[in-house]
Image (cartoon, rainbow, N blue to C red; front, side, top):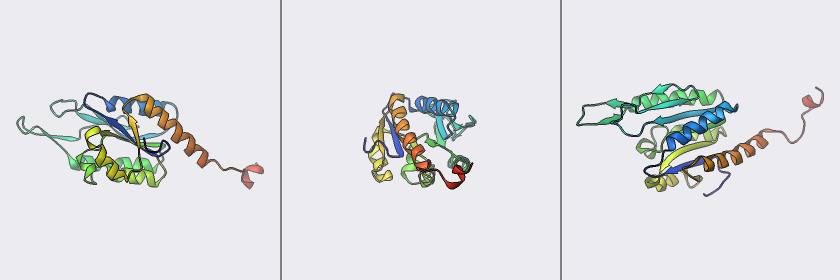
Length: 186
């Protein structure tokens, strides 16, 4: 962990771990408790799985992000669909959000494409971001993030602890230290 109060967190996972379930539960819990979690969480992990899709947070809408191809060619990310989803998420962020959740730091994001622009968009609006990052691409993530990131274990406890620190700090930044003239005369 580089800076526990950094607004940019990587939920770093290894093969066999399920960051999707952790991010889904996290988003659901936040939204149930009155926060506004926005973003996308992957469902399923491999192309042969017919259920491979993603969930748009907070709507719960399921999205297919992969093109179906013949059995020998496997499947392929539908970049056009991903771009459209990114535009939708950007609009939702502009309506107000407490956190952005991004399903993966994948090849598109490593190349500065995909949903990479949403990270800058959210951080520019002082919205914390959490993204699932595979262990084998963590060094690429550090480069992408300029070293300004929190490295979280792939578990709910680490994610919740980071969120408590970041959300408490951000809440105190939004509250004025002193009452305004209008508040005094109310």
